[in-house]
Length: 311
Ligand code: C5P
Image (tube, rainbow, N blue to C red; front, side, top):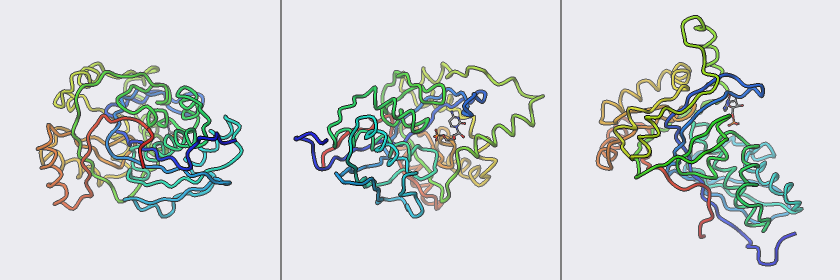
């Protein structure tokens, strides 16, 4: 049932993310890896417009080529909408029009942002008023990064990455992203890490049973100091991502040779994120990387999580 004052359409904006720290622990019973990560939401957004419908459908527009993306019930945003309907006992449907700007399979949580936006949009469109906690519970069912796309800002994720606690953060960080012209499968990158660890089990320290975020990362985020954060950037998925996609190593070199404080693979890649000291350095880096014929986007973080915006 739709509430009498429910809107005919709702538009929600949700951000992509960078993991400024990602430590991968052991494989858990559910097949996921235990991890400790520091997320930062950045100003590259997915905009989802939800419109009342009898059915559940999705369409795409935006700066990203969406050819080949699933539009059936396997689509994460449709799954999100169906979860809200089921939880609230809502019997109608929704059409989701997704304006995509976060790269697909790029390691920035674009699909997760779509799902988070769909949760918020359907809840408002249908007047189901599930509330934040309930939506966070549904988000965790959809994927490890979906709860963070809901909350945004800066947060620490543990477990699968879905158990969030807020992190104190000050100021704004300047990033330059290099988008790849190919995608990367997250399970493949985790698998590559497992293979590497199996091969070198004699030579490397035992994998932490309970990984945690380094204190210098928390301190850098708390102080808003980009130099300190550059020193602390770390991602256990970087080595396997570079191993699977060796061309990314050159991207790292070009970024760091052109004034980036540091570069890091975003999540499981292949998007590369370069941290700049300030806006001027970020602009210079953006120009240099564009001149080197990379696809470049400049963003800042942290930014807010999924929320309704005016049409
Ligand atoms: O939850 P999500 O669909 O984003 O995860 C994609 C895949 O990434 C999982 O199926 C799993 O292979 C891998 N993953 C993992 N451990 C995590 C998060 C993701 O192994 N903590």
